[in-house]
Amino acid sequence: MEPLVGIIIGSDSDLGVMSKTAEILDKLEIPYEFSIISAHRTPDRMYEYARQARKRGLKAIIAGAGGAAHVPGMVAAMTTVPVIGVPIQAKALDGMDALFSICQMPPGIPVATVAINGALNAGILAAKIIATNDEALADRLEAYATNMKETVEKKAAKLESIGYSEYLKQMQLLLQQAGRLIQEPDLTGVDLNLPKNWDMR
Image (cartoon, rainbow, N blue to C red; front, side, top):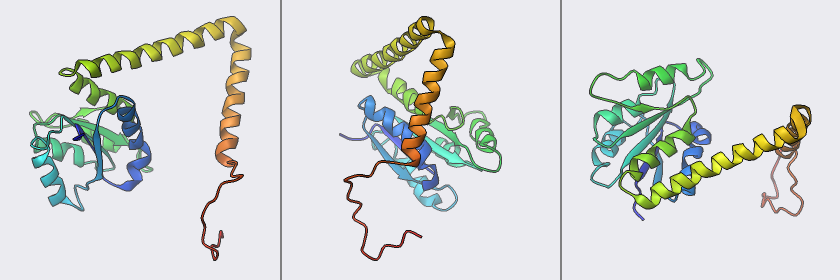
């Protein structure tokens, strides 16, 4: 299927955050494309992408950027396709610079801006834009919302049943187990296909 959403990032360092957008679009069965476009290093590529977006059938563009974060605003200036900006948290100013850069657009050039590192919500917002003309997608969004509601209700019932102290203990245990899995993954039986001269130092 042809992509309906374009996900673009200014650098591959943004990939970890913006992967959440791809994950929710996969879950909602929305075709998308994913690429790197830098406003400063590849301005011609950015210009071409923005100018061709509508002709190629894109219904929304999600642009993640940190620091100066010029990509979302510049793309929005060159296309009628709705642009959703995701401010990426950087070391210097914790993403506040990107947030202000993306949301403080001049009149006539809007960028729908989500929270810092809010890539998941960006995907959901794009889905809602597309769902205005897609009943099947609207139904999938309703199912997603229903699932969230039921998850919260189950947690509430558990908390009310066992009390906050036990609930907190179980939460802490799960977090510890998750931390161990990250720090000490079980690679038993996994063929890493490393070259014979591989040096792990």
